[in-house]
Image 1 (cartoon, rainbow, N blue to C red):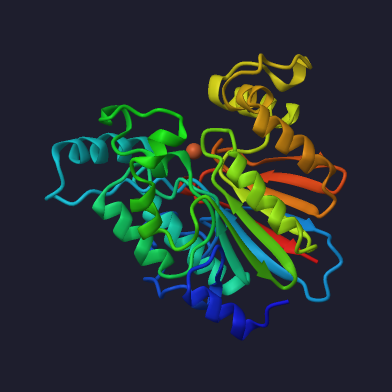
Image 2 (image 1 turned 180 degrees about the vertical axis):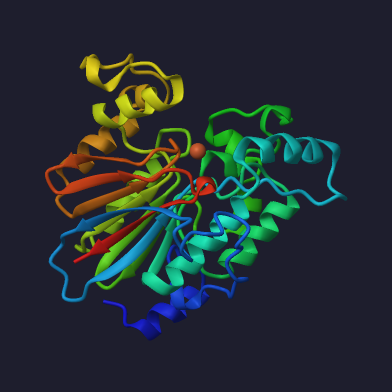
Length: 320
Ligand SMILES: [Fe+2]
């Protein structure tokens, strides 16, 4: 088990979770939004307790999908176009929501995990915000939007492949202070493993690295952007994104997209089957779908999705 001092030392080297005491100072709460409400009521929080049997309990704020949409004036025309369009899409309060979340975290929990899409697309301004808020210490995993150079204006065009990621992987690795493919950090005897699965699949290299982590024989919390779908998570996803497949009908909507990929890609299919039997896996934290929903993943593991941080969502997870 890492003591606090060792933990903080490791944080300085860059880690997946940041101790809330190490979060950078932020401006006071902005009273312009919901001014009559309580200081932190602007956050829409949900809660979960993960029972592991720890000597020392601790808690984590899980956030995801902030979708920052900043661009400097000196950045190119594509970035200017994107900042205009996508700021409208996400409401324009994304940075404020992130700041509120981190301010809340500093007062209420021990660590923060962010499961990707902190930025909506790559820009100098967005990368500077990532560095500003997470400093040396983040937090989490890549999202599919981390790899997007210019959304629909991208050149080369976005492809959901490792080769496409390779175009900017080194750049991202220089900004985000954790191994963007797979990273592990042990907190109070719990191994937080963060993973890039942003197009729904995992690679053989990641499977091998994960199995190395299992050898530590510690309980594992897997943090990643795209969930490993169950039928329940799929129903909720389709309901939210297409307004089809009402939950009440009992009929499972057609399996497409990332869920289909997970059933068809042999490496990912086998990895998920293996994970379902791995009793050290105790919890999965994911995002991407912009909905708060949870489901049992395996006999020992529950999977929690958290809705968009751009809409002030977060989940406090207590590990006991
Ligand atoms: Fe996403």
